[in-house]
Amino acid sequence: FFYSPICCRRRMIDRTNFSVQPYTLSTPEMDFDKLVNKKVIGLNAKGLHDGDLDVLTKVLQKSKVLEKLSLWGNQITLADGKFANALANNDTLRVLNLNMNKIGAEGAKKLASALKVNQTLQAIHLWKNQIGDDGAKYLADALMINKSLQMMHLGWNNIGDAGAQSLAASFVANQSLHTILLDKNKIGDKGAKIMANAIKCNRTIVKLNLEDNPISDGVQANIQQIIDDDNRTNPNAEMSSLEQLETFIKNKDEEINMLETALASKDEVIGSLRADLASPAKFIEKVMAKKDSEIASLKSSLKYSKRVAIVDLNSELAEPTSKRPRTDDTS
Image 1: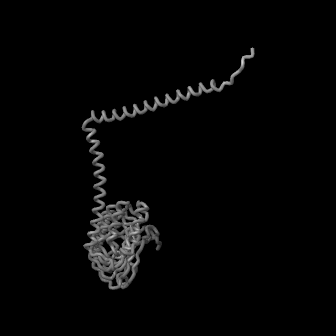
Image 2: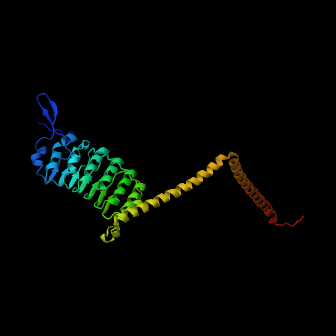
Image 3: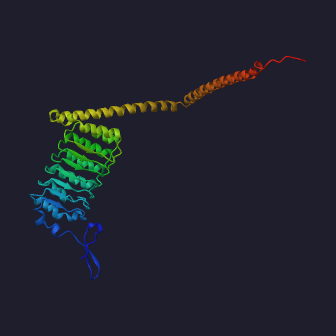
């Protein structure tokens, strides 16, 4: 047999007629009796699709010892919901690594439903899964309820300000998450500021990675300052959920007030322009009056410049005469 490295999926070649046949993971790697007794399962970069997860789904349902499941670098979408349903009712798994798959927003929705029920999973890795803002919202809804997750990796998922805002709202309610990684996304200053305000109401988050996002240095520094504030994570200074919510609402009110002020200023400019447009004749008169004033000023400046130039010229012409030496007539 010859093993092709293409897509990290093994292929069996019949050397008699050179036909290539797909080779699925049905041997020791997918032996239920062996997998169900393992604490750690790693099937990374095997080219697995959702249809290849039936055995693992069964393991999640039956295992009493499985603590870590790593499936990074496959083609998993979780679209059929079978794996997510098994995860929801599993009470042994602590770490799930699904980095570099194809989960997308729909897969994130299925996964979020599982996280609302599961209360034992502590870390989930979803780096580079095309989750987007919609997927981030589904996961944020799950964080509102979940009380076991301590780490979530959502780097490189095309999450923007809208997704950041959804996650920020979950920070106010969630008090178990201590690390959230959002590197290589599309979060700007707007989303980052909202997250910063939310973290002020959170007592557990100690690491928020926003590297390689279009966020200004000042906003990044402010977030880090908030995270490093010992008073925020001091158990003796813990606020009630109501106080946290009130603080979050107060911060939101401040943002709204700033927006209203900016809009009011814009409204004044627009009102002035509308008034000018409503009476074209008056607008033209105003412009002409301004131009006449400018022309009069230029004329005045020109007259003054001419007057100075004439005085200077007369002085130069008179100076040689006054300084010419006197000669005596000796003839």
